[in-house]
Amino acid sequence: MTDVILKVNDITKTFPGVKALDKVSFDIRAGEVHALVGENGAGKSTLMKVLAGLHRPDDGEIVYQGTPVQVSGPLDARQKGILLIHQELSLSPELSVAENIYLGAWPTNRFGVLKKRELRRNAMTALQALGCGFGPDVRVGTLSVAMQQMVEIARAEAFRANVVIFDEPTASLTDAEKDQLFHTIRGLKARGAGIVYISHK
Image (cartoon, rainbow, N blue to C red; front, side):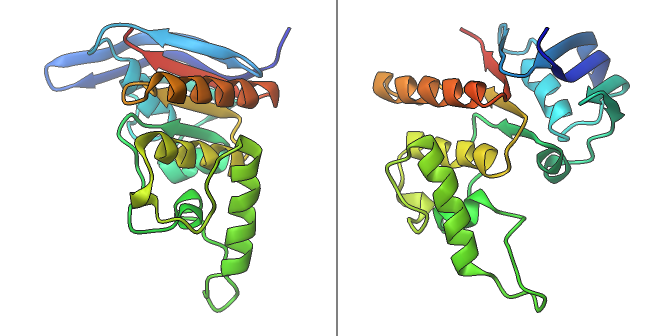
């Protein structure tokens, strides 16, 4: 049996006037693509935001690599190895690809000065692993939506994320770009990441 990377038990989340999640349980295994499908408003994104530390559950438990955990925020989730790729991309258009990949975790020396060469080298390694056709120095705002999505996915590669969550990833992509995305997801799956793919289709 494939190893369970992440398991949620009886997750409940209520917002004013609506119970978004009512005792939801499921698990994600290494090398598995787990589809989470349902209508808009069904609670798919809410559940994933709980896993990514954007929402705190009212009740229930998150077990990551066999240990119950609290996820205090997106940076904590990323450091644990859980990465949510939003439908609305969370990139800074004025920064370079490399700066965006490592946003919040730039390598610095003991004086707090950015190690540009190390940042660029590490970003290039992640981009090459995904077969991206652009380099680490490109300003993100000049890239297409599909290419910006690849920058987000490069974060998963750079931080060797064990769980990668895609929230409606094909909404703004052409057919060719969708094919590239699915190829990338297969690559993440092959290296043992657990994938959650959210869709209302």
